[in-house]
Amino acid sequence: MTGNVLQKMNQIRSFDQSFANPIIDGHVSDQDIRHISDSLSRSGHLQWSKIPRIYLVLHAIGQLQVITMFIENEISDLWFPFTERTLPIAFKDQNARTQFLDTQRNIISATLDFENGTKHYHFSSSTNVPLVKLSELGRGHFGFVDRVRSEVSFREYARKLIPRGPNFRKNKTILKDFENELGNLKKLSHGHIVQLVGSYTDPQFVGILVSPIADCNLKEYIETTFEPTMLRTFFGCLAVAVRFLHEMFVRHKDIKPQNILVYKDRVLLADFGISLDWSEIGHSTTSGPTTKTARYCALEVANYTSRNSSSDIWSLGCVFLEMWTVLCGFPVEALIRHLTETGTGSSYYHMNKEGINSWCESTWTDTFESRGPLQWIRNMMLEEKDSRWSAAALADQIQDYSEETSIGYVGYCCDTAVGSPETVATDFNAHEYHPSHSTIPESSDAQVGTASSTISDLGLAHVQLDDLNSSLTAIHSKQHHSAVRRAESSSTQRKHSKKRVKAPEPRI
Image 1: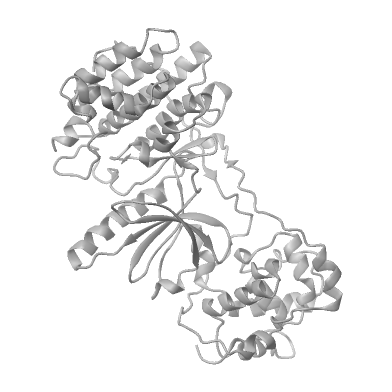
Image 2: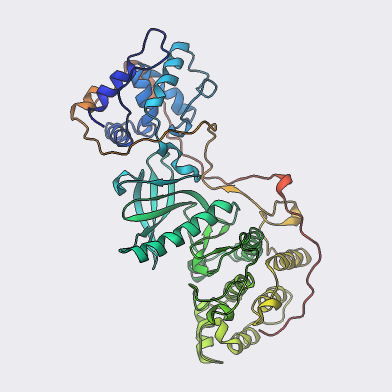
């Protein structure tokens, strides 16, 4: 795009006598929007800087004095495109409303829809991605996870950032795993699964935005200070989450404490990079080499033999074993040390059945409280995969035991005894309502040089209106709530059979 923002906005402001159509020669780019937002922030107008598109439209039509009306109604740039119905009622000047609706077309871009999770975006440069890195949350063999803030909504998300391969073969593998994780996240909407916000590729990276930003993963949680009452509820909630996965024909394939997140009082399954969607092939059984985590994988996975969704149950059983270990007052390190000193001496669960059995017998007394978890774990970690409980049977068993003992092994969110939905779609960011509109047009993300005069010409260096002074001092810094909203639709609640599996308590 050529010319500076001032020239374009002056063109936008030039209407014909009927105010029907703006006379324009160009489009304000995302790069321009960022410059305006930064300038507003530097000039002390933090609230204005969070709605730069609304600011530009109001400035162009000479209605900047009503910007506080948008702020006080918590209207953001995500509301674009507006319609006559969705403009604030208090914005009464009909001519100004018409001008606003006509002018908005010049600041609408594809990135306004970036956080809806429905479309994948491609950026010609990493500098054009509308995200600001705030901190690094972790890293692994796949890449990085960092905390980012959107330049559109100013919300914060976790971003999984994966470097693209240095050659065709490596890049193809990375993109295949990326597409797999993205496809599974798109079809999985559940209160105990991380929520997809958006995805993109640029020449250097592929990125997935998810919500919420977890407090920690389960490994960190059980190795530090944990709340026993809350940890107990994770048994039922994780069983319900895995049941949902399998009902959706998805196998996770890498369940382990590091891939389970803790956010406030909620536990979340994450990292679907190697998961399998078997809805197209009709069955969950596969064979051959696969990516795995040796300590938590089932024997059939380690041996590259035929495996199915019951392999997830084994892995979840390993997680349950560690959870119950710490609830009994022992650190996970004590369990691992015991395994290395007994049986085969291996700390891989599938390779040391004797070590696991002796650990259970020596540390867990046959008490009223421990019978349930011990039975669950034993029926999940059976060597014969077809003998293991299904996720549905496991969830039922935990629900029954929780009701019989009045010990909370199921979170309120998943407890069928209190009438809560078993499948909970959660908006962790509590996105404010904005109407669904027609498709937003694509825009170029070409680099733009902004003239030094733009800031002063647009009134950004000393944005000051006499009749706004008193209003600006009254603007409160309204934080966006991250409260959890549950979509409780009785029509989508699943009806599960009440047939309970009354299996013996076999040795592992």
